[in-house]
Image (cartoon, rainbow, N blue to C red):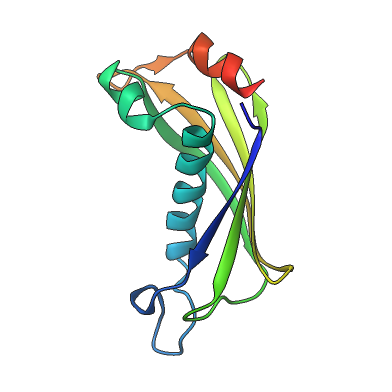
Length: 130
């Protein structure tokens, strides 16, 4: 699996506040897009995982806003797998516009079953990520 992936996103009008800046909550949507694209680029799919009863949930996030993105900006979401253990997957993110860092984050995922019980990260997923 590619341990890193970059996704291009054009900031849409409805993602901004009255000042034309991206609303802070939308950065978390961009992280989800980057994470989904990374898995897809590696040949995986959240839809397939869920059909097998493997759900992925965010259990921790640390984020820092460096500079604002604005309406119609083309931003790059850089997603990197920093670490995979038996119980968690840690991603690191950088969101940039023209090499200017706008947002950075570290996000920890856990795998649960349909009943919300913690599971080991599936072997197939660990293999893809290493």
